[in-house]
Image (cartoon, rainbow, N blue to C red; front, side, top):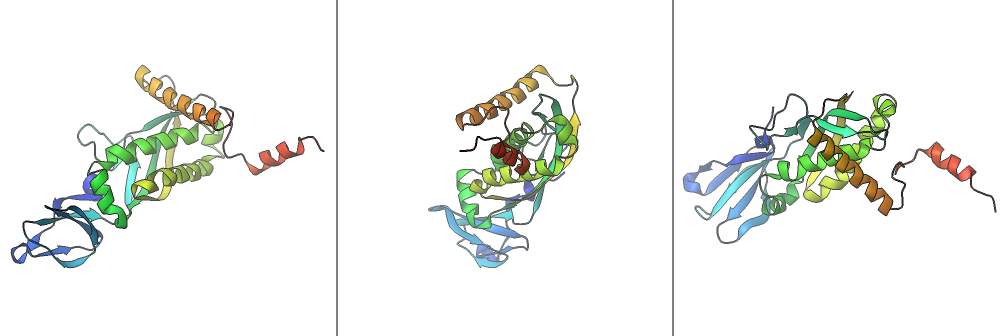
Length: 238
């Protein structure tokens, strides 16, 4: 399984000719740290670049499309910055617990890498990507019943999660290319009490957000066209 090194190359790039020249390999970009000025705003793209020895250092970032995998085969015990997550547990609109396995395709906004490195640091998987992904998946599943989530609403769930992730991660300098739902499995009394509390806490927060925004706690924020049309037809005519 890929680690954070697939997104952030942890080692500083090789220096040649006494440290005056650095080379950025294909598929990567470089950010410059200056001892006196901090992280510089300019980004270096593949090719040869000149720098000031001892004063400037360059760190590589992966500019390619990266898979963030949510799977039962992943463990966070040894590496909390791994590019993925353990199975996510969530609750549906009819209060049924499910486990989710999925894949998110993400890419760094290379123009904003200095900002990301400066403000978030190297641990942006555990700080941003993982908590946001968990929250958005759980939020979307509260809009769908278990039966529909397992059948007709699968592609709709994928589209909704993708949009939620784009809305949440773009501001952090991460592009979400796509979201694929690998499996959605009903759970029967297999969760610990603490995990159930965490899931229900997320669900309650989502419901409270809907109440504040004027929606019923059990309503779908994105009603189907036929639902909207039927509601209009039931309105009294003036």
